[in-house]
Image (cartoon, rainbow, N blue to C red; front, side):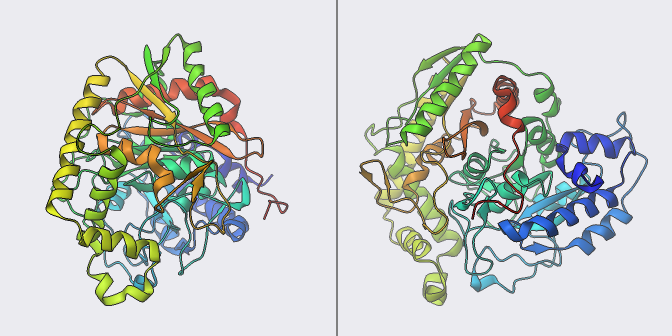
Length: 483
């Protein structure tokens, strides 16, 4: 095995340790990632926009002199990262996966990227995304991203390129953002870790409404420790994001170093809302019971996500998501309708047609749900459920249209396990928990109480340890990868 491939197989935590000790330089890490991307990404299409020369220039100019003792929490020490193609990197294209923006070049990096660069990250490539939004990464600009575990399957989305690049060991960390599951779903489908932190924990760019409480930026990595490290690198208060929060006194990386099993865990297969693939349900139930081996009480229980007078959580999210879509991209229906995917047109038109009564109903139910969840976490330390209701589906399928005997009505219905958690405002993480009989990864979604990011990471680290060897299996990434 070449030295560059050996470097790529390290976790981000290990790689940063090498950088801090001076055993490897930022330029060597950039070259290792570049060689790996060039060798492998032709099979996957995870990182279609690459700027190796920009990364090399940053690496050559990278400041030296920090050590383990004086590095700030989250200092990445010159580690190359992938940036999602919804985020701006100065001088590079931001396409949003849309032909409308195929030639759009960012004049400056956005807030999320600037914070990461100030924390020692070196962006090296943009990760592929669905057109504007969605949980299957394909678009008319770059085409589909293939799952590194099986090239005939989706990598999920919308951070699908990020998840696939991590699973294929092309980068050590990747940015993501999450409205309905865009950090968690590709993490589950690709066998990596994706954290949706509390809103404002990571400063958000100006592309979306600044006061929107549904949209969060967050980290993706191969392990819980890597994700905690990146969260430390991303977090901080800035006037550019009115919901951003100060850096906490204790670094999140400490949570991964100090795993702590929860005492009382609520578990539900389907949140009482819809169908879940039976194999996924069995894998996740068995995984949740691994927490019992850590002396946690695991109990079948979940908050009430059903209809409590203002509609259920499915209806509420669909309304609020459509409202946000219309506020951000609504004008495109009139100006560029033929160039927009039909699912996105439907979502935009739904948002533009919303009535005041529909919006009020959704806001009232979101308020009810928040209070329901805070009451739940007075009795439980952690909530667990499958991350996704289905395993990775065929790449040529735009979205699942049924789960078992249940017909689905919209292109996001199958994502319900993540998007109703979004409504609660609680931090949530997807951690690998097993594989289907056909060898496809499955993730367990762990949810912490409001503002409970640190405790959630500590619990996720304990769960990861309990799963053991599942974290160490490598994807089938030789010339014989299934296609």
